[in-house]
Length: 234
Image (cartoon, rainbow, N blue to C red; front, side):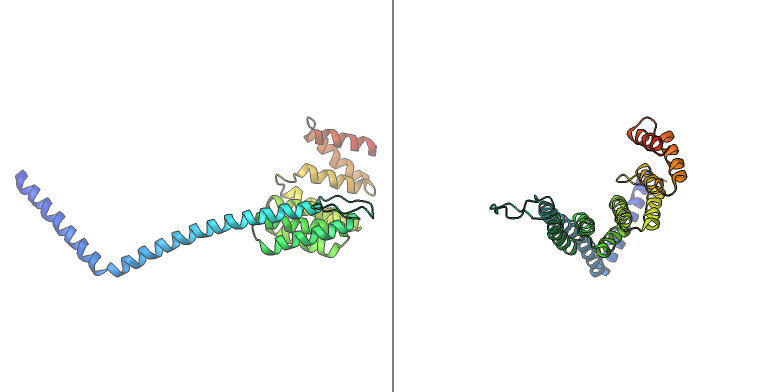
């Protein structure tokens, strides 16, 4: 077949294909517009969501910082004159109560990372107030969110349990951390607490844990601390 004929055939086929595509697009124009609009709407919504989340996190982080200022405010003797622009409290319990309320407002308003941190601190301050029920409630809520903050909440709740003679509940939480350690609380840290808990009533269990810790971490501070605690039990 001559080259000019082949070229003409290719040109004709291209023209036919182009014509068919144009006809299809014309027939489905409204659908194409709809799909294009939907795709654009999805993109706009995604961008808006990201912007809103960023804005919310910025607002939440400022609110969280303000709550931490309350938490870190000085405790002064009764009768100390007030100072403009300076928060102060006459007891640690009063400070914990005020901070608890501040953290609670942040946690209730924001579902961002700062909001979750505020929920964790709400549990911590409830424990400092002696409100075991609310400390347990808030810290369990944070545990449910998982991750590093979840393990911190487990660790804190275990301390609350130990302070209230709920040793088996504390043991369960330390074992949970050991099974799924995180950057915030690793297995060695949980095992040290387990050994400390066992040392008074079940020293043999404490020794086993400490011996393993000393062996596995002999070149760092955890191993040295485990060896010291082991020597104290002996």
